[in-house]
Image 1 (cartoon, rainbow, N blue to C red):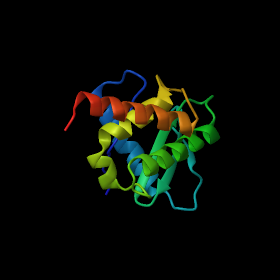
Image 2 (spheres, helix red, strand yellow):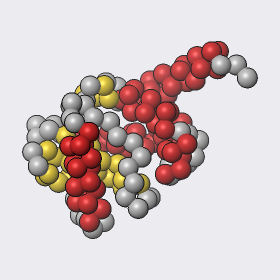
Image 3 (tube, helix red, strand yellow):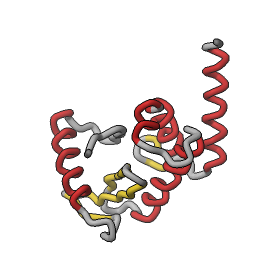
Image 4 (cartoon, one colour):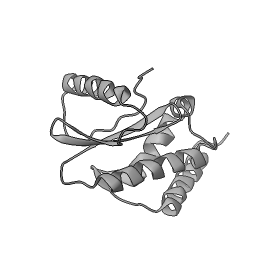
Length: 140
């Protein structure tokens, strides 16, 4: 369908430019064949993407950044979504209904465009602590 469900920008970019860039990039990525490489040059950036079922996860990185590390970051993010959202395999509806948690997980990994933590255990622990704090603040 080509609907954007999550996006995180680490450079100040006007909304009009963001919309144009997203539209262009979606056309490029969705037009690629499944057997094609998950890396591509686009504008002055490198794009790393991976498809999981019907979802595409894309990162636009600077030229000096490592594509393989970015691909691993995407994979770890999806693994955590699978585990934390208790779904087995994350799908579009899981992200729609749990977008706050999806952003929180991403923020535990990446801050200001830089990888902060690669340990799944420490990210899981941070999320469990945040969930406990939420339960204390908002008891049933």
